[in-house]
Image 1 (cartoon, protein in one colour):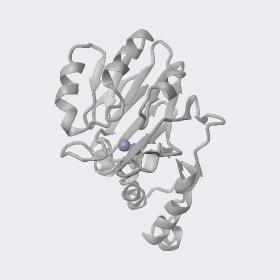
Image 2 (image 1 turned 180 degrees about the horizontal axis):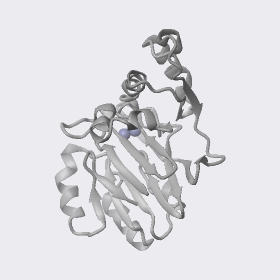
Image 3 (image 1 turned 90 degrees about the horizontal axis):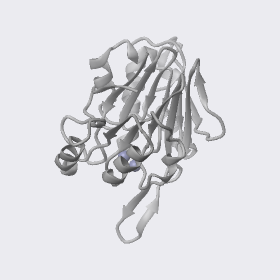
Length: 252
Ligand SMILES: [Zn+2]
Ligand SMILES: [Zn+2]
């Protein structure tokens, strides 16, 4: 069993019906959440409330709010659901200290949770070796993410990561936010599924690269409302190019 469930498919300028970036990977050996944007908890509960207590780990690509703003509420929901097993949240190193301070400031610590044994561990993402969960692994790679800053031109958002999930020879590659495909290309092998953001990348270039490399399917996510109609029209001309919606399931 290997499922990808799109929990949140929106981007940094929200539209109704698309939650902030969040992607749930389910295999026989792992339940992993990649990013946790606004609205993550309610959508996971709509899928299956039991998942709240089952998630093995959360991986955050970078610290933009559309990728982390649902995290505090998800942690609170885990506590409310009676979760007991510890949870590790992996994120870029520069988020660890402010994130822990935010947990403390919002009463999301054992000091306020009494006897409940639920503990939250925060760890910096590392590209040195994969994270393994039985026969499922997740590796991270740096992406090419920039933001426009009025008056300064473009400024890098670093560190910022994408993820490669592997399970029994199958590959799911999540782009995170990136302006170019270069960070992703090395991980693509024939049969891969690409979960690709649609805001910063040229989607025609993505599809072209995918076709050349024998990719199984392209799933566009991180959708901007302004360009959605054009993207849908383009994707409809290919049988294996999908535009994700919240709660869409993909067999990768
Ligand atoms: Zn984003
Ligand atoms: Zn971003």
